[in-house]
Length: 446
Image (tube, rainbow, N blue to C red; front, side, top):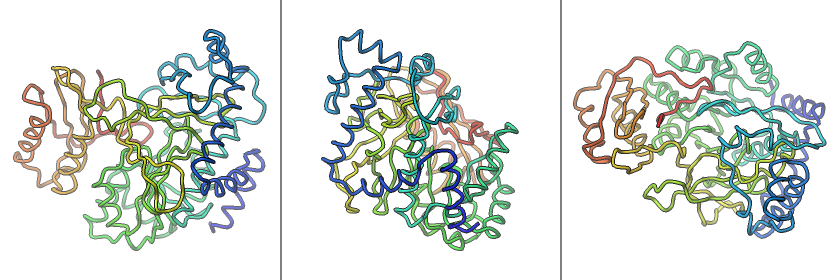
């Protein structure tokens, strides 16, 4: 389907749904060039309106304002931390208390992937949905990708029949196609290559692990990723390691672009053409709070986000469960949307030793990525921790994997965690992905 045709179909769908994507996109194309001071003024205006709505229509906040002898006028952008931070688990257990009693306007039902627990189903106003889509399309335009451009997707597809049919129809209407298996292998990649050559695509989207594996597959089979002429490769939903970026950009000859977001908050940050990751501060408020555990690195902060447009179920100061390193730098692209230096990983991705020390799992991910990419000894990996002081490694070995590499891994673990950490290494044939298609490199059951 041509880009112009797909764009017109999307216009028609958004009109029928009363989801004003185009007006939102026009606004965001303008607001991206605002000064930082003007962005803050806009956030303050939106926040005041949202808090007033919550105090009058959302049971949790109606009670909170009453219990704390506080009024909406007492809360501003500068003291937003007066409001409580809401954890995912508390939100899920009390979701009925966060649904607005009186919300005017169309809504849709959204859900989280559920890769770290039970999926969360919640109402989302279509005004919020429109801003989220528009923020994504604005990010695409930063890399020369127009709305409606053909998309190839390494993502997986729902198992449920009804959801599967919906996904297929949505893919057609949005001018995209995907591989249809959550667990990728050479046969799946062979089929995906055939479809890419037949149908073409302007850009590639996928989970970081799938895209990285696809790049490694092409490289290992002597295939040239440049022939696909992608304008960008967009990765989301999983941490992007330096080795992923190096491999993907070398194989496809285009930038690997980071999109950071969540179903609850929409697009939170997007990488611009200059390589910086900008916060979508004209769509949400992002705070960087101190993590609950001491991780030995003062630069690490926990992401807390406030969506400014979902009046059906407001997410105010929502602890999203990710760690990041904020930045105070300015970007050469000229936009004054604030920057985040790096999205590090999950808050629950913390390795715990028997003596009470804590380490980010990204230490192990970087090491295992080194074995997988630079040395080519393992095809895939996963690390499990079911009890403090013990780690279980699942490795899919390649032909050149030898006991020396296993010894090297054990040696590195001793350097990181000390000799008291028990290490169990298992060589396996397959490591299943989550039902969503994500691959969680580290899972803690503590």
